[in-house]
Length: 488
Image 1 (cartoon, rainbow, N blue to C red):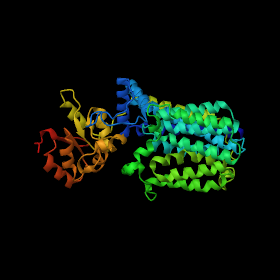
Image 2: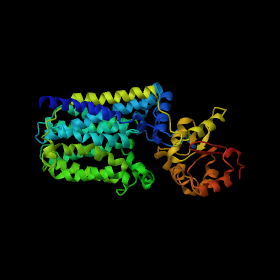
Image 3: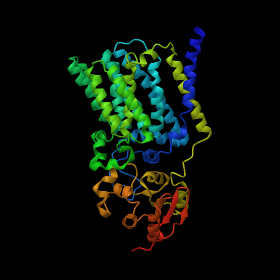
Image 4: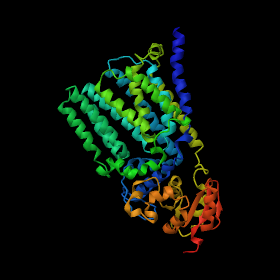
């Protein structure tokens, strides 16, 4: 019996290693935002400055930009300049490893604060499906890779501070708050809400102390120590102005009837099942539950927080919920450090594979051939003005073009970017590849136009009447040389 138990205990780290190998690196790059994040960071490194204006646009440097992600961009660009695309995966692997360690600590904290000293292995099983979903949906070389683990660790240290009163955790909270504000300031309000919940709970329980007020106040002030100041902290209110953000898929409401969203539905059902067994009549948990439910059903972008914090509730429900409490009695107790070693080994092996076989940009999703064609004909060293779709403009910018609009939404919804139809640059980019395209091209005067191969045949016929035949076709689509078109 002892040998069987030991075998099970050692098989878990090995299984973790195998599962880590299934986190294929190809899913961690080729996100449309990655390209302009790299270019932003590369520009800042080259010019030794922090960007407060949009670069490489039809508008020159005249459009204001809030540097709410500058820290991430500097880190990502530095790794890219040192190692190329494998460097981007290194950041992904390290961020994921630190996140999983944080989620484990989150589970442990949840049990400790509700009086459980033990840590049944079943508690950590939730980390496997949650980790897979988070990796494949959210770890696409974007700032949330780093802000996700920073938010989780802030929460862990906040609850540790609540339980122990140790100023060591208070200092870590302040440093973490400052880090989030400098790496991905747009999500900082989430930790402000968590802190507010904790303060309200302390007031309710009459346990708020002066040192608590000092720590939470210092954490709030530390967030202002960033180049964007208060504007970066309130960035969410900028991008949601006039509901422009709803034009982007990840901000749209979740379609729960779509089969691709089955994991989200299952997680919500699981959350609903465990809630009666995980709240423990604690006001903080009630507030957390309400907040996570709201974020979890709002849209894809905020659904991430459901996956990050369900483990906090699941950690204690397994001791009470029918069906789960029996699993908690299984005598499988692998050492946490051995499981961590298994995860680390899998991520390291994936990193080695990436360095041995560096990834390539998908030329069917991004205009790789098309930009090669354009740049081969740009002999004077200037950046061509290229009008491409919203999702591929970041790639065109990264390759060396000036673009109408890219994923940095905030510069392109300003009054200064308005033109024909009274549309901002963001609106023209989102609505433009339609029957309105000839008029937009005439107004914005790009040098080249890149059209996706899957565009409407009816629209393509209209566009060829307006622009002539394409001068090049590649795996992604077609290139039109607008410079050769007679001026009206």
